[in-house]
Length: 252
Ligand SMILES: NC(=O)c1ccc[n+]([C@@H]2O[C@H](COP(=O)([O-])OP(=O)(O)OC[C@H]3O[C@@H](n4cnc5c(N)ncnc54)[C@H](O)[C@@H]3O)[C@@H](O)[C@H]2O)c1
Image 1 (cartoon, protein in one colour):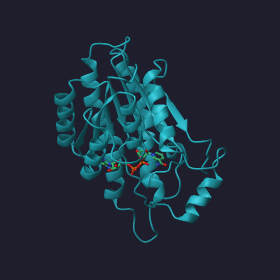
Image 2: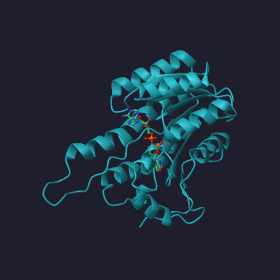
Image 3: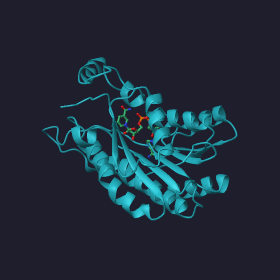
């Protein structure tokens, strides 16, 4: 479907990949519902994007918060055509530090945000999309942000990699469930992008990671991610798959 005039729900919209996608889709004429737990960041972006953007504070870990946020989006825009699930955390932690095991709460929290929270947003958006009048024969597109870590997780990434592999795992069955409504489901598995997540890395770690990127040997620009999001929305023949966007990086 064409982006102009469509209503797009974006989680993680206050920063990084979600923010870049919100800006690009808004520039193409989409109405953008910006969801994030960072209220200040949301307000700043909503203000920058103008009347066709709305910031809605949400904590994707909290089912009541998600339900209320999707309700607020529907009240404001009347329908949801595209859902981009980019909210996520990369809290590191080794399985054990040799003296004590990783606190279960650390593992659980990453799964709750990255996988269960994502599914929660997705199920509400899918329910709304199923009621849409079709546009060009389809009722919606759902794009979930996984990570190259789903198959190449590094040390300290057991929780993160497990959450991202879960997103890959649900892509095909969710696409099967939603095909009858004309809703497509895809995942993007980014490599290393220039966002706050990457800015948290030390120079040494960053340089080491860059050595593993094939070509071009640099971190990705969030705008390159946003361009793929737009293409997925517009290209009806993309469905039920995981797209790596990573300049060929192979991490271990
Ligand atoms: N940057 C990378 O190199 C990279 C690589 C692979 C995958 N990813 C994935 O891309 C997505 C976006 O990452 P980014 O790099 O833009 O990170 P980011 O930290 O810049 O943005 C993530 C956003 O998610 C929001 N968020 C976190 N927890 C939330 C919660 N419980 N409820 C609502 N919002 C919440 C944060 O407030 C933040 O605005 C994430 O899912 C991340 O795992 C990023």
